[in-house]
Every structure is written in C-alpha cells, then in structure tokens.
Amino acid sequence: MNANVTKNIVSWIAIFGGLSSIAGIIIALCTDKNKAIIALFSIIIFLLIVLFAVFYTVKQVVRKEQDKDFLKLADFVSYKFHDKTHIDYDVYRLIQSKRPFLTEVRWNFKWSGKSTPKIDSSLQKCDGKIYKGVDDGFDHVILRFDKTLSYNESEVLHFHAEMDDTDNSSLPVVGIKIEEPVKVIKFQVILLYKGADFDENAELQSAPIHDSGYGIKYQIEETVAFNKQSKSYECFVPSPKVGYFYRLEWKK
Image (cartoon, rainbow, N blue to C red; front, side, top):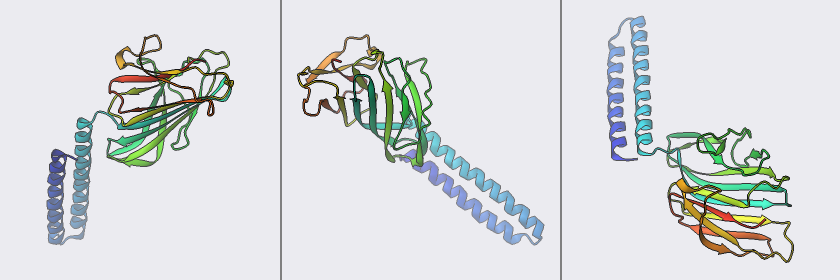
C-alpha cells in the first residue's frame, strides 16, 4: 500500500479517535437519560459514516492505481483428447488480487467448435452459465470464491470445459492472452487417439494481441516434438512477452 493510501487512512483514524473522545465527553455531561441515548446514537451514526468514508477512500485509491481486479502470475493449460471427438480443457491460473475485497472473477474463453461446452471448476463455484461475447468475441463464465480475497492475496483459479467435437469443426489450437507480466505459461496437449506411427511436430506461435485471431498468420517461436510415450506435446514459455497472444498449434 503506497504513501497516499497510508496518509488517508491515518487521517481518518485521527478523526475517528477525536470523535470518539468527543462522544465520551458529551455522554458524560448529559444528565438526562434520553438526551444521552440520543447523543450516543448520533455519534454511532456519525462514526459509521466515517468508517464508510475510510473504506471508500481505500477502495478508490486502489482502483485508481490498478485498473484490473487481479494480476495473472502463471498459466498451466491442458487440452486432452480422449478420442477424436471428446475433449477436456483445463486451465490452472495463479492470480494476485488487486481489490480490497474480491469475491469472483470473470473468465474469458473462446471455443472454435460449434457445440456448447460444459463448464465447471474444482476450486471455485461455477454455475456453468455461459455469457456470450459481443465486442471482443470472447464468451465468459463467472468463478466465485469460497473465501473473499483481500488486496495482494494470491489464489489458484481452475477452469474446466468438457467439449464435444463430433462434427470436427474445432481448430487444433489452444492459446493464452498475455496482458501483464507473467512468470511462465505451460501448454500440454494430449492426443490419446493417435497411433504409434504419429510423429508430427506442433508449433508454438505468437502474435500481437490487436492482430491475433484464427485467421492471422502467427510468428513461429519454436517447434515442439510429439512425445510418443505420453502421446502429448508439452511446452514451457518463461516470461512471455506482454501484449502478445501465445498459442500451440498441432495437426489433428
């Protein structure tokens, strides 16, 4: 918490202390019981207003300094094909709250298939309701915490989607948008239906966020070999560039 926040809080505490002293003097001087009760209630209401003002000041200063509800610190992405049509998509994300009280987060996602995915979470409460995107093209769900996060408190989010690609309409890509400094992202794509002779490389790609999209030609950052034993691709990206969209693309 910076010096401005601390200064404002100290000022309000000083006012609070002064009012408490005045309240004690007023009550002590009141000889009439009814007058004392009225004075006491008046002071209590005034003190509640002061407490609200302290909370509001802290909230506004914090919001001014940080326009996001939270910071993303790391992402671990798993995209698992049980067969050619049934997919489990899981993301574990380490975040840090940037609000005095954070009760829920909005999780954006984009699924290129035509069927509606089933969404839930093993770490947060999620009713599975999908809110369709309009402006940015991303749909979203709400993840709610069992315990409210305070300022700078960290938490692991979990997003799970069960998807059906029976019509083979989904694209063989999975990606993450990097909007603030992140320590690491990890992609894991598991293709259990592939035979023993499959040996195609995947590509780690990137593009500026304002240019990113499934129709954009991405820059190839590196190629990723297919692990025949685990039937998967795994790729770590330490300190990815801010303002870029990273994705892993493979052959179906």
